[in-house]
Length: 81
Image (cartoon, rainbow, N blue to C red; front, side):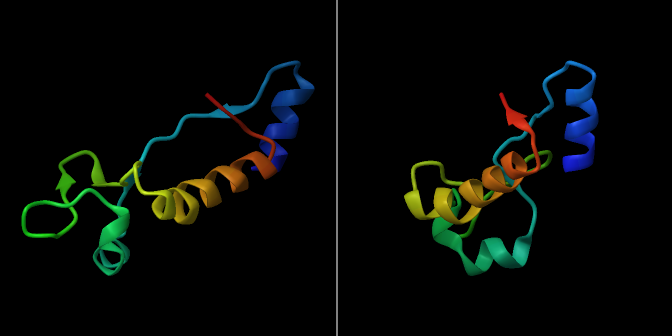
């Protein structure tokens, strides 16, 4: 992605990427249930278009999933909005 970011920057534009809190890896979600919004049965909930919703109120989920992802994107030269 850093090549794309450099190209966009060379055109006088600011490279950026849109992202959300959707997660689709079922085995990871089931192995790390506390990172996700769960239903009354304790299993991570999923939607037709969303996948598994990361629990944004859980600092461990943010550190392990969101922070790692964001740091990688930023290291590749992308900005987040």
